[in-house]
Length: 90
Image (cartoon, helix red, strand yellow):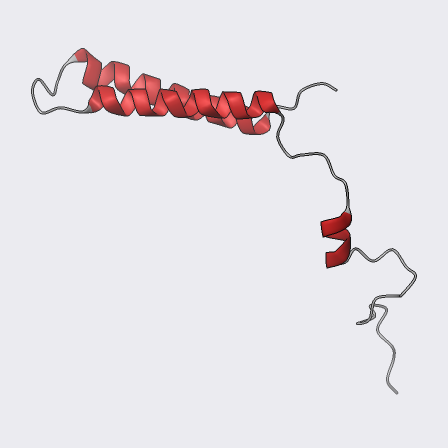
């Protein structure tokens, strides 16, 4: 004796199905606010600055190359993480 599966393969015509048409017609809020984009750009600038400080073949054991540049790069990644996770109060 065959039993019917509780999950139907067809979506109900008048039901609450969330189809592809609904994705393109819904008026959802944007994922990021302008402050998020500003933080992302600032984090990217920190990453670029840290990598530029690390460039060069002379004096490879200088304070700038082995201490300052990695700290700036780590700060850049931290700012990027904050930029992604930050939600402004509405």
